[in-house]
Image 1 (tube, helix red, strand yellow):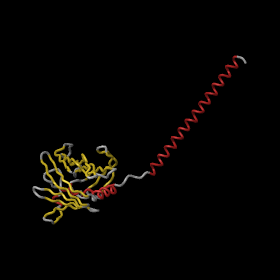
Image 2: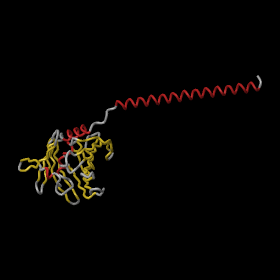
Image 3: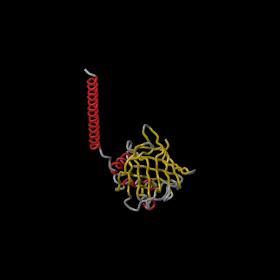
Length: 254
């Protein structure tokens, strides 16, 4: 065999090898693309069959049901600057009592299926708390009687805005609109823990759509094997600004 023939055969061998490599690469590339496409289709199918997020109505109903099953007898306080206002918190299912002293004042909250009712208890008799006084502050703090009544939990117009984290907790974010101007708030935003169903944050907006108040859980505590609120911060804002003009802490003791 001549040198030219040897050289020609070598080139053919190289070309065949290159062709084989190219063919393998193309086949391999097709397999990867095909596999990726199959995987994408699988994820798309799973996503299409995944459970949709719960409705705002379901989230609120679940929260109300959870709250109405508590059995507790604890001491608490409202603290604003140097002022400390102690109270006793007793709950028997859907019936919650807040007892203040100096002067004596007993508030009773009943959590119903479709509404809540705040009563003022005097000499063993419970009378409905006047609606005209719901926006009054409790002992001069940032907390009002309306805040204590949880009426916003029953507002019929509510929607889920999405998901957000509050202090590392994954929460549903809800918007609730007031049914009438009887409330001090035109709408309320709630952040509800997806895992526990607990209320982590609440923001109230006035009738000019300005943030007026924010409630946020700061810490929790375990009492007799169950988790309870330890401290909640209540911030009152100067309308139209992010300036906090008053700050109250609601604290529960063992």
